[in-house]
Amino acid sequence: MNHKSHQAFGIFLGLATLLTPLLAADNASRSAPTRDWQLVWSDEFNQPDGSAPDASKWGYDVGGGGWGNDELEFYTARTNNARIESGHLVIEARKENYSGRHYTSARLLTKDKHSWVFGRIEARIKIPRGQGIWPAFWMLGTNINSVSWPTCGEIDIMENIGKEPGTLHGTVHGPGYSGGAGIGGPLTLTGGRTLADDFHVYAIEWETNRICWYLDQQLYFTVTPTNLPAGKQWVYHQPQFLLLNLAVGGQWPGNPDGKTVFPQRMTVDYVRVYQKPMTPSGR
Figure 1 (cartoon, rainbow, N blue to C red):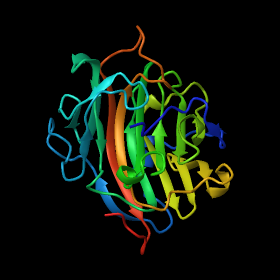
Figure 2 (spheres, rainbow, N blue to C red; figure 1 turned 180 degrees about the horizontal axis):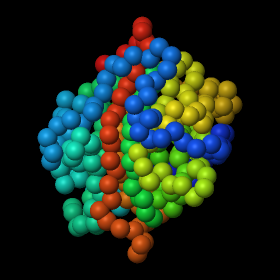
Figure 3 (cartoon, rainbow, N blue to C red; figure 1 turned 90 degrees about the horizontal axis):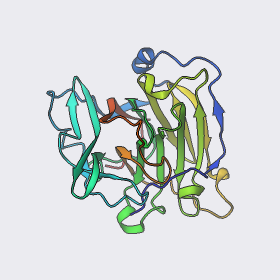
């Protein structure tokens, strides 16, 4: 199913350029959200080196059919592609022949385990770099099996494509505004900096009729029902689950080239979900 499509020609309502230096990644990682958010769920990945991610929190999408985007990898549930190292989750894309594909990687999700309605959802991630590399931290509605994509709603908290190493994309996809018509706001770093240079905190604050995107605590994009095409439905008031994946190739990023180095690693320090008191929970 085409749960996450390319956005190369999306409706970018919130073009933002970072004009001031980013907060130091170390400081950002330790700064708790302001206002009255309370931590309700997290994974700090404090397990033995080489172990698989916590099965009570994460499952896997497994397969290699292109995932609606002409991707090249086969997603596995092996520790070769997703494991714990030094208190981090490592999602590793490898160049190897596997089940008829020429690359492997992993796509983790909390579907049927944990989901939420509203909250601050954040992860501290060091993304990889390289042509054809496509890391993502995102969400899908838990009703996807009954209503399908994009009616279930998709919130892309962080996407980056290797040919744009300094550009971060935050996007929503819903009925009548999905795929290339997704509503998003890219942010481009200044001074030749790239997102892969260090860890960054990628977050959304999702409230009734509003979703705000942050990079290292700096707001860069907001979407509300008024931003939707006329007559289209705001579907972001139902539970959603989390996904973390590292794709190889696809319609949007294009395929790896001779300069793309493998293996590629997406390194996740933590994932945290905050909510306000009395916020309805998913499960």
